[in-house]
Length: 404
Image 1 (cartoon, one colour):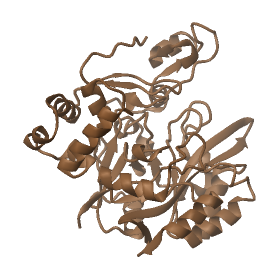
Image 2 (image 1 turned 90 degrees about the vertical axis):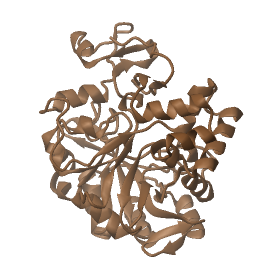
Image 3 (image 1 turned 120 degrees about the vertical axis):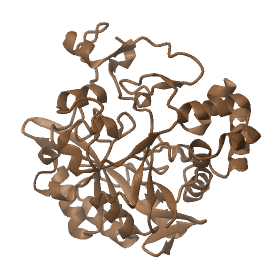
């Protein structure tokens, strides 16, 4: 079976802080430009978006299709609950095989919070309740721990999370077999916890605009079929689930500790030395993903567990071109160069991963080719992200920001 790339976690225009141009047609267009084979719909819990999905998508086996692109019903939800005296807000990605199943799930979930206020609804229920309801309605569904290390909403997050998945999902933990690493961590960081060896680590874009889909993604070599794909994930089938495409984790907006308003960015050791308090304002800094991994890790860096799923780091092509041309990502010059290069080589992922160097030289300026090759070789400098601020990739100059 041919390889395909999948991104399960995206959003619609009904989620807060998302592009108003998001539509199924726009998503399908960009998925084809990127070179993807399967895309989550995002936000099936929102009634207006679900109605749009019903009117736009057509059934294609046990997936859905529009303009030649396959879609799977997906959504992200936020569960807000107390355990002991602590309030937890934990995000989850849901996959389900049909619009009918999505409708049944929505009817149950709307008892716990409004589904029409936000495409990523806040539900006053425990994580265990969510899993029990979803799996009780449709056992073929998949509940994924979303961006597991994000400080505010991840299952292991420093502000709202737990030290173990079992603490969060309680008697339903056996149904949660897949974790999303998030933009600020990669599989190698997660490999440092022996307890995570039993879970499948996936990566998705969490895109808020169509152009951002695929910035992290998953590679499969199997039939484009809901049950085949979800079974490969649940069982960590290395013959069918080949690996993930990852941000450099330093580029994620919660990689290091810090306080964005005070421009304080620290390594975990510095945070501990200062008692977790900002040196400028004296308030608590946001403890990032690297720090949290260090706290929970029981393996040293560099250990790869047996049967680990491989990964490869990428930088979005528009960012590479913008750096090469010394222009902004959204500028006309960058867009023209992007479409010319993709048009010549077929898709963005082919440019980033597979196109031979001589083919790239025929299609793009020398500096753009140099940027693509540097990313393939991991020759990048990054100003790390912290406290909600994305990191910045430097391909042609040294990273300038100081980190304590």
